[in-house]
Image 1 (cartoon, one colour):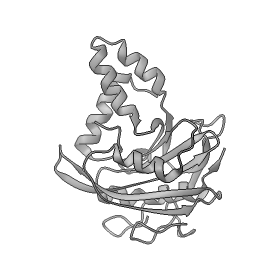
Image 2 (cartoon, one colour):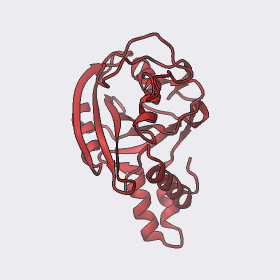
Image 3 (cartoon, one colour):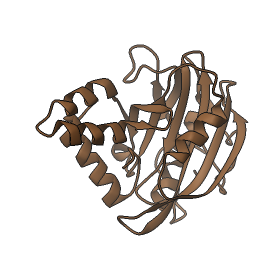
Length: 236
């Protein structure tokens, strides 16, 4: 099981598992052709790999700096209405391992909080802005791995991924980044939907931003928030 953003049943189960195990640690137009609330018709995306005309959402503030909801190696703007919450993976794993079923809970927490070379550090919830999904931030330890290698390991740790397409681009803050778009099939719901992520490396380790969604329509509706992150991301 992976700690992933997205589909109703699978993602709801993941959210429920997190609450149980960790105690609540803490684009364009959508499918109907209507732009999501808060989308601004400005700033074409640095890299347009999503297959639609990408626009950035209106900013609701900056995340990542000291004093923000999540202290990160990078900063970026969060879409208006979205709510960020830090994830303390260490505390979550410790609490899970001390539960009534420590071994099983610890294994579940480990699977939810780590993916490939990175660890869940922050999630930005779209629900307050009217969408179902998350922009999640994953961080890793310093090392020699480049952004492309980190991202490929992140995707390789997923289950049921097909049609992964990678490309390089520059964030609005001048960082070299690698992005992937792919299809994810949920065994539980027997559905396939679009997801995307991008990675950068910093002096304090790699960072991956991942966008899922309940389904492809929700994913597409949330892309302006993802594009805003790409266009504003820079080293803290």
